[in-house]
Length: 340
Ligand code: NDP
Ligand code: MG
Ligand code: MG
Image 1 (cartoon, rainbow, N blue to C red):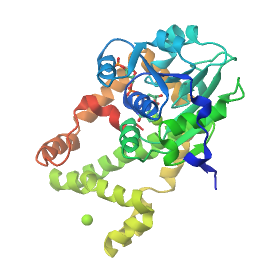
Image 2 (image 1 turned 180 degrees about the vertical axis):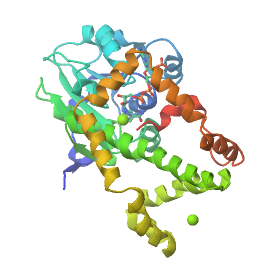
Image 3 (image 1 turned 90 degrees about the vertical axis):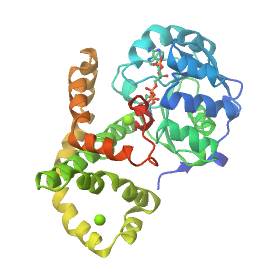
């Protein structure tokens, strides 16, 4: 089994006395800044004027421009949206990095796909929590944590690995477990997971199930409960104890149906498509498409997003959830809470 490190395995002294700039104060940024500060580290947040700036001030953290925060800091954690990072890096971070500084990421995309090329005299590593930023913050305040991966891309000082581990401990990740990876493995597995299983695979499965029932004449409300609402209960059981725990809780009829019908729906063909998806990630085809889509101002992203938001399952879902006040109905502008 891969070696998983916990609080007792990690020395944090190497990061003490260093100034940490957390660039960005969104889902991950606010969690890293507040957790590190409460763990006793010296934190400054780098931002532009706007919503996040006001929130960071409200939360009592020191805020500066990205250029100022970078210039002040020894360790610079880049927590901007991935598609914004290359531009902000070029304009405000790179000119203010000094030899021996650390340049840190929470996802390997830009370094792995050469959108950011760091100078040779800085440490480059990543600390990637395997969970949404709002959980990174909430679990920390509860004395727990979200597990994280770390990887060293470039070790200019000889201390990059120790700094990465101390950083992971500072955000509370070592309470749950910290595992070593590479930029390549983190980037490719993260993209594959969100595309094939967690986000893309799941929404496509839900939609296909919902449409199958509605096209067969069943009520959309019944189809919604069956294919979307109940999924949460099943996922909770999987999270707590894997397949066995989930199957223990469902009826034997459901379990038999799981065995005989699951592999008819997700079959060898589906797995072959998953391999295609992985190949596009590994060869840079996916990255190139996403980079160009952003340069073109997201025409396809926006069109698909509009169509998806108008799908019948979304319309029915909005109405049904409004009648279930115990479900916290998140406004659309909070969508970053669920990025993986
Ligand atoms: P968010 O979109 O939640 O936050 C982005 C932050 O960057 C905001 O505070 C925003 O401030 C700020 N920002 C955007 N543009 C600029 C700019 N030009 N100058 C200064 N500040 C700017 O990002 P995430 O937290 O989702 O993602 C950050 C990184 O973490 C990414 O690399 C992502 O892959 C990684 N990651 C994210 C996870 C998650 O849970 N979301 C999970 C694991 C990794 P403003 O209010 O001014 O727009
Ligand atoms: Mg049932
Ligand atoms: Mg991701």
